[in-house]
Length: 578
Image (tube, rainbow, N blue to C red; front, side, top):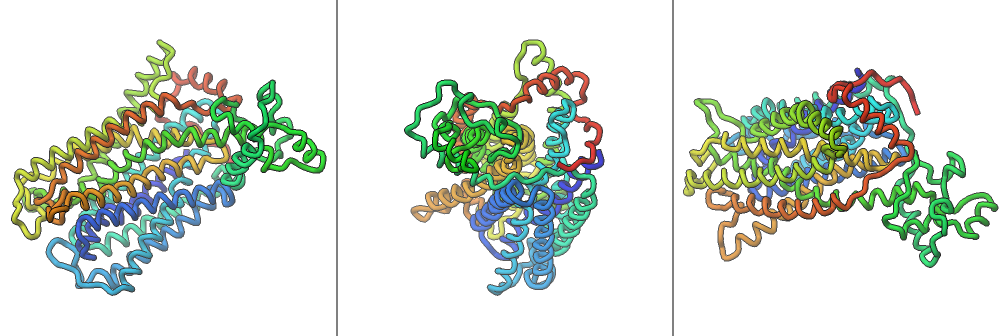
């Protein structure tokens, strides 16, 4: 129990640190570094995308060489160094004159060295957070024993609470830190983030004696390539008459056979061309007699199935990218839209970035609704009519539907904001009389969609990847966010270029009152609708991974579900190292 709580608290503190920088980064770029709205939104999207690109680096090192514990520790240290560097450079160089960066006091110009120091710092943060994130989720899941029915069920609950901790951590940064940064106290906000990251690192290291460890299984990229090369070399060979019985099986060769990276995967009929990598030829038999199998000519069935698993995941993964385009608007255009609305209540000014608190509250509410209401109902129907209940694929589809509604809501709000806006303003923050609280529905809908999409993704990719590629599965979830940010940046650039032809102000000008941000939101709603149709087709085609010996365990889990409180952690894992 204590170990599982450590992972969730660690995630909350690390997220507080990360969003203490990320949530107001677009305003830092416009107010402190004097960038325009489109450039600032693009730079934030590229930076956020890079964070998730680095998740692949972390996943590769974890699965191949370092293991999850060492990878988490090293990248958290890099994260702390990046935050410390940003805090120092902001305090010493960037926030000049002192107190600048609010809505009133402009900051001065900055030298090339100062700008370089800033970008070096935020990309160190990107490297540290990106390399750490996919591994901490997988390392936390490692603490549950999948062979134990109740612990396997609690592992599913862990992902929900892990994502809740992520959002609760960002709640503090979006409200308290967001307020101080909006008032120009950027260095204070960054130092608070640094302190939170240090606490997260210390908490992680304190739990070292109690963790359950798994050894890295070797380079997954080479295993993937070995299957492709071996299958290509045997492209002219006919299939054996008895199917898998005549294919190379690592269990018959012993546990130390090449390619043995975990539990055996049931053979499937998709991508039959790859099965040729496991066909045994006379040359393979000769190689074996001479001292060993050549892994570039002969691969075990489970290794072939690993490649098939990844190929089957790709269409689903591609369909999640456009959702991430919608999600990333919360950190960029939603903030700029909010800044152009009425942000005062009496004498209190609401920081536009703090509106994402409603997203976090929505996440917490819908996690509770899902785990306490929807999941128990689905379990009852599952037992009555034999259906599968709400699967991860169902949940991701629901997330796409809610994301479409969020973009429609944002577009409608923008239409009314423009209706009550002063189009002749020079400094247009707060230039519309429409209250910023009209953004609550779009933030709340995004939060609801996250519970279905991102929590579903975490569970789906962790469950559907082979044992030797679990961190890669979590990295796929983050890569979806990364590609979403890059696609968002590309889409904004294209929209600005096309909409500013013939000397028009465009859809997203510096003065939003002269633009049509509503059209951009409606464009995203239309694109996501098309993506939903493609996703449904891919989900119907998808075949889940099947591990030998796991089907019986899942039957046991089904029998125990009535006796299991879905959001209670089970008894602690035994202290063991594998």
